[in-house]
Amino acid sequence: MTKVLVLYYSSYGHVETMAYAVAEGVREVEGVDVDVKRVAETMPEEIAKKAGVKMNQKAPVAEPAELANYDAIIFGTPTRFGNMSAQMRNFLDQTGGLWVQGKLIGKVGSVFVSTGTGGGNETTITSFWHTLAHHGMLIAGMPYSEQSLTVLTEMRGSSPYGAGTIAGADGSRTPLEIEKK
Image 1 (cartoon, rainbow, N blue to C red):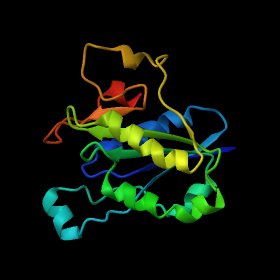
Image 2: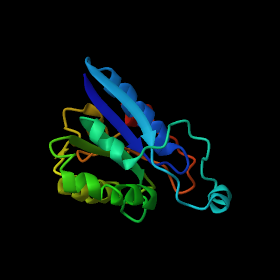
Image 3: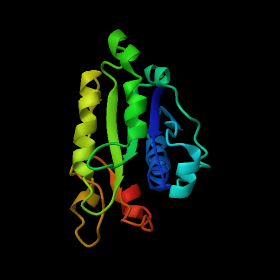
Image 4: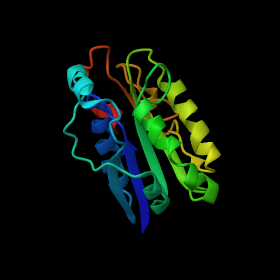
C-alpha cells in the first residue's frame, strides 16, 4: 500500500480546509493510505489567540522523523511575504537528520498554499521546492489537464505549480469547491 502524508500549517483554517480536501482526493486512488497531520504552532499561545489563530485543529502534530515513513508528502502552508510560514520552515529545518541519511530521496513531494490576493502563491510553492530538491524528492505540480486551471470566470489560487486558495486580506473568503478539487 502506498502511504501519503498531507502535512500542513494553518493559522486561520484555510490551509486546514484545503488539507482535508487534498486528503479526500488522495483517498480516491486505489491502494493508497493517507494521513493528515500538522506542524506545531510556534507562536506564543497568548499572541496566537489575540491574532485569531485557530487553536483547535483536529489533526495530530507531526514529528520530522515521521516523514521517512511515507512514499509521498503533500505540504500545505499559508504564504508569508512570498514564502512558506515560519512554522513550516521551522519544521523543515528539523529534517537535517533525514537529509544526512537520504531518507526522503525518491519520495514524491508537492505543495499547496493559501494566500491573499497577489500574495505570492507561486513564489511560495517554488521556494518550497528548494527544500524538497535538497532532500532528493520528486516534485509534483498540477498539470493543465486539471481543467480548473483554465477557468477564468472566478478567482482561484491554483496554478501549474500546485493547488491553492485565495484567503483575502481579512481571511473571510473560504476555499471554493473548485479550489478543493
